[in-house]
Length: 336
Ligand code: FAD
Ligand code: EPU
Image (cartoon, rainbow, N blue to C red; front, side, top):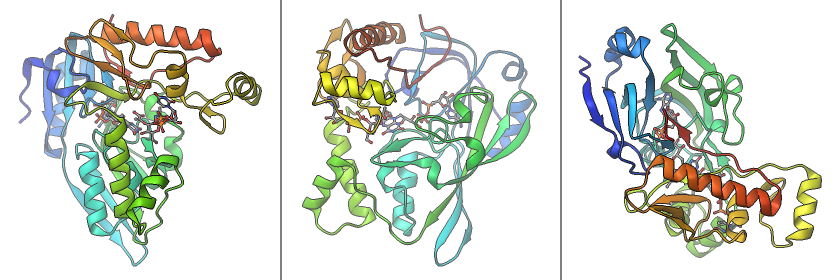
């Protein structure tokens, strides 16, 4: 059974906390409901939207059409030897809980990605990354349904074309692929990665470096920097860190010797901060006062307010540095 909720409240399902309603909402909790979803007339023919935990989206006040909330659960051990495991994880599992589960089993690699909000199914879409690790390196296969013809596909990691905050799911498959499961291959021997600035410092204070210590350090650093969406609406980094060519990098370093960058990738937070916008407020929304890459909803703000603020930030950064900032969260429907 797949029973729609009409005129559904989406405020609890978006981390910005925008007031938003959907014409119809279907919640997928069991794989057995998939045939009913694919046969649903409005889902097949009307506008359709997929939501995980809504931690990387801008929702409009009203979303026409059908929203499917991905809540499929389950972790299955596919194979195991003394080196590694292969596991299949349903798309609606919570990402952080899954990372904690792996650590408890002695399956490693994902510890640097602790505390990233959202679902396992959304993780491959922008190839979530933090503290020197991107999820794509541990993914073997992404399983999804092509919503245009109900065909099931299994894409290898290579075919997903994972790159910084990018994959085929942000391009040709955007809003067309319903990801149902992700398969991971994880090592059983720890290979902690802690070369990322802040992390190294916190770990030195913790002593022995284990994957559990890395996870704890990542959690500590994240909690000290990023606002908790339960307290203050946000979607994490609002812009991607821009990649620039060598000539642009040299020009910027000469003009701004303290510029923060990792190779040719500039820290967008530094650019926004040093353009004087950290803590800037525009009505009910603003640039976070500790992390300038995070735009926040102080309460009562809308996606249109955030888009207007984002435009101001983009314009200011382009004027100061000649660099264009690209948005990270996905915009659904008509937000302006
Ligand atoms: P949603 O926001 O619900 O959806 C995002 C997009 O994916 C939408 O286009 C949606 O249609 C699509 N989608 C979701 N599920 C499916 C599915 N099963 N099939 C097909 N399409 C689907 N990201 C990072 O990479 N690194 C970070 O360090 C990080 N930190 C964050 C910190 C905070 C405080 C917040 C709020 C966000 C952060 N993010 C980070 C962004 C976010 O956590 C990730 O993008 C996450 O993967 C989104 O998961 P979700 O389930 O909430 O997706
Ligand atoms: N910085 C400033 N001022 C600020 C913010 C940052 O000067 O207001 C400087 C910092 O001092 C540092 C540099 O910018 O030198 C980078 O900052 P930070 O380490 O906090 O990382 P970030 O570039 O802001 C990226 C990801 C995060 C991820 C962290 C940790 C992107 C767009 N963002 O943030 O991902 O958690 O690194 O790896 O790549 C997300 O995608 O939503 C997200 C939170």
